[in-house]
Image (cartoon, rainbow, N blue to C red):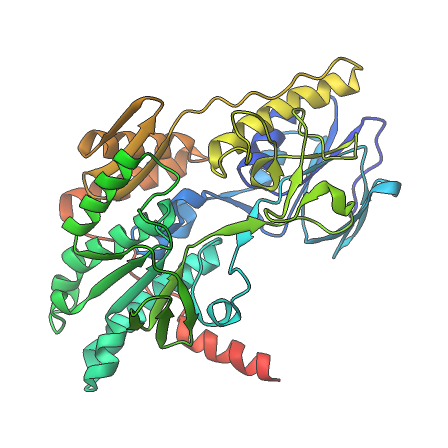
Length: 434
C-alpha cells in the first residue's frame, strides 16, 4: 500500500461513513499514524440520497472527498481499496491492493440492504445505499416517464406510471413524499401528455403503521401528510415476490409496476476473519462492549451501524442512524489516545438528540424526547439539522440554494438522465448470463 514505516502507533479505519469520518477527523492532530480505507473515494451523506434519486440534488451535493480529510496531516493516509478479510492473530488486513498491519483496528463498515433471502426482489428491485444506486433510481423514474409518453399500450402505460416503495421507515416515507411532489409539481409542466392522476404511488409496510421507529403521534401525522400528497398506503402488507413486472404480497393486493424501490431493511456488513462469537447472527453486527471493543478482542473496535452495544436503555443496540455513529467515532478517538497512554478507558454514553423524517414541502415530523411535533416547524428543523451535518461548506451552500430554488419555483433542477439505467441493466443481465 506504500504506507511509510513509523514509530507511531498505526490506527487503521475501515469505512468512511459517518462513524469512520468522525473518528478520522478527531485523530488528525494526534500522535498516531492513521490509515483510512474505503471502496469509494468519497463520504456519502446517506440521509439525502433520496433527493438525488428524485432529482432534487446532484450527487456532488451530498458527497465529500475522503482525501480532503487526510491531506492536512503527513501522518494520515487514504487508500482506495476493498477489504476482503482480517487476520487478527497477525494484526493483518487483506485487501485487493495488498495487506496492511495495524496496531489498532476500527471497523466502520456500516450496513447493506437486507432482502431477507428473497432473490427475486434482490435481482429485479431497486435499492438505495450508494450514490450510483440513487442515480440508477433517478434515471429509471425519468426513463419510465419518457416511455409512458410514447407507448400506445394502456397496460404498459399503467405499469410505467405505477411506483411501488416497500418499507415505510424514514427512507420509504421520504422517497414516497418526494415522488408525490415530482408528480404534483414537475409532471404537469414537463410531461403535458401525462395526466398526473394517472401516476400512482404505493407505499407498502409489513407492520401496522408508518415510521415504526418513531412515536405513534408522529406516525399518525406522517400518514396524514402522505395521504394529503396522494400516496396510497398499504399497512400489514409484505411483499413476497417481484418478477420485474408484478408485485405479489401476502394479501389480495398485487401491483404491476416498472418502478419497484426496496427500502424495507438493512443488515450489518461485517468483514470476514473474526471469530463467529463476535457477530450477533440475526443483526449481522459485531457485539461490542461500552468501549466499542469487539467481543473477544482488545485492539479491534467497531463503531456505527456495524456495532451492537446492548444496554438496559438500548437492549437491541443504538438506533442505526447518523448520530450514534458520529458520537461513537468522536468518543473512540479519545479512548484510542487513552489506550496508547495506558490510561483507563471511558464508557460510551449515547446522547439521543431525537428522530425526524420529512414527507414533503412544509411537512415533517420530529421526536425530541417528550416533544413531538409536525408540520412547518418540524420541516424547518429537519432542513436546518441536515444542512448542519452535511460535510463541507460548498455542499451546504449548494444544497441550501437548491432547496430555496425548489421551494420558490416548485421545481427540481437535477432531472437529467446522465447514465441511462435500462441500457445498463440489459448489459448487466447479459454479463450474468455469460
